[in-house]
Length: 344
Image (cartoon, rainbow, N blue to C red):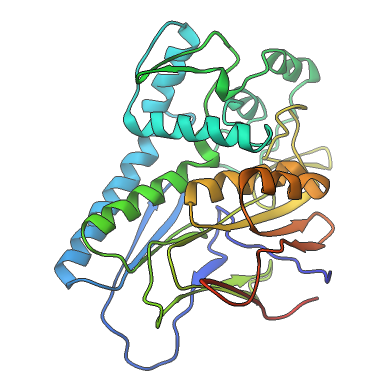
């Protein structure tokens, strides 16, 4: 397999971008840009009348910003309120959106054989990764502090659900939905667009892309660039599909000459550094989002078994040494077409 230093769709920078096709006149469309989830969110809508498109884009912008506030893993909002209630014990309730993400989290934690774990927010906080300022220059946490959290074995299936109520006896749980919140937000956005009969739309959230639908004669073409911004590959989407990535290139702790990436191994409580990036293409944006994180944790030896367990078939893995592995589900034709333009 050739060395391909891919940097696809990391959350801090738009390495996956929409390609305009040709210079011929195209049907009218609405484009809008917002800041949410710590990144730039671009919305493009191609069908419907202009007023409906413009109103829908504005509505989604407000929705994304509300979700950013309420689902925030370390600032005041609905998720922080839920975490406090779980820590106190006893039955509690939460919003339908957070409840849906919890159910999805429990399913994907089981399906991923534990490689996706949204209950380790205490570990994320301990490492200092609950911040928007990178790189972090503080020293890593002491092994004893890591062990105290791991002794609780935090796991989202330890949260009991009963008719909309929830509780847990595991005091080590702190939910952090960063591994699937964007996927859930984009899924809800597409549901809203479908209600408005706007079924030809694409949302790019910091390089994580969801095509809500497409005209088969005018598919969405997404450009993939390398670390220097040079065009490397394209993904063509002619149906509703998601392209989500997780990687360790930009968010990290740097101390005493050592670099510690922000994605943590839920068993060791330490950063994983054997995978530079995992990209998943799937019909379900929530699964694509969660699977991308799980495959980074699984690493070169485990990613294939975790992909099978999670039911994802289109995967591009970029390992720390620059080697690339592509799953059998990646092909050049069909509803999803992946074309590598050059190799190194």
